[in-house]
Structures are given as structure tokens and as C-alpha cells.
Image (tube, rainbow, N blue to C red; front, side, top):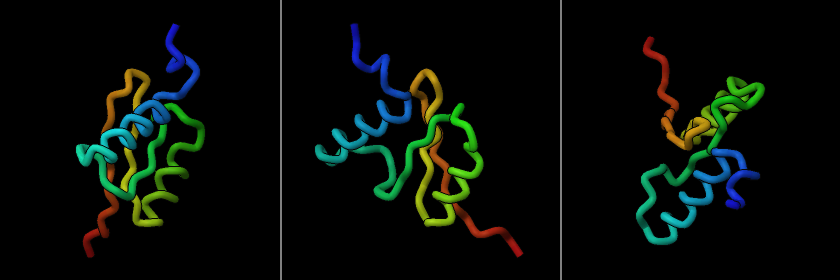
Length: 75
């Protein structure tokens, strides 16, 4: 039985990202936060991370990801 069953997809992906960063092979930005796509208050968590100039790695139940970056709104 895998211990991954007790960890959220975001935690699993973040742990793998740390391993890859140590090997200098991480596909994720240095300043990123990993958020489960089905987490409560996801919008507020994304806003907080982007306000802090961090990228957001949105992690889905199957551990697939989408990376979001803050970009100034056009004027």
C-alpha cells in the first residue's frame, strides 16, 4: 500500500518538485505554491499567492498540474 494515499495531490507534487529541484531539473518556478484544485477557498489561496508574487501550481486529483503566473492587468 502506498503512503501517497494519505497525502494530497498538491503535497505529492510539491515533494516531487523538491526532489527535482535538488537535482536542478524542476519544471516549476522557484517561487511557487502548490494548491489542490478542489481545496476550499481555492480562489482566496490563489489570490494570496499571486499578491505575494508567487506562481501557483494548481494540482488536480490525478496529479496533473497547471501553473499560473501573476500578470498586471492591461490599462
